[in-house]
Image (cartoon, rainbow over all chains, first blue to last red; front, side):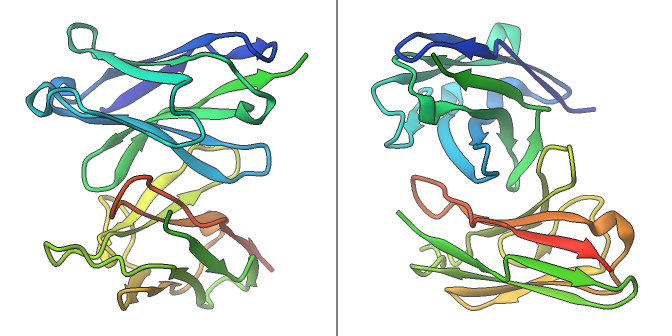
Length: 118
Length: 112
């Protein structure tokens, strides 16, 4: 059974940093293209970032709204993907989902809440 | 960025009847490989989104065949036949033609 479990969310002040972790199991993580997608309080889904596999040189892609502030990375030995979020803004407040692309965004974690507020 | 516009914002359906949701793209979603990069997701209340349809018309694993999708390069329709109470939630279209991936704003399906 495919499982994705996000941790690391919480309440943080604007300008601060937070690192999300997504621990996975049930599939060949080392071959997987992993994504982070967030959902605003208004329920709008927004794609955040993607990291490809080692065979694709771990290529990364970002939404313009987070480029330069967020970094996606992975540890294949731990079957985990990370999202380092720096210089957080109030508009980054959302539920963050870790997702795995197979035929589409097939598998999603339960999500982790990030609230940016002073 | 590709803009996906969904309609209606919400739909209320009697169990057993059909429902249709539209998604219009600001750009053709037909890739150079001949694949139409349009996906449908359902987010049930309190749950994470789940994949329903991939590449415009293919059912994801475990999705009942009451769901179907069709379209052209820019206009797409998700149809739910014989709606059941478990179909309640918000339906989103999305694409993966290019970066950034984007999603529609969602259509809420309710049961009368």
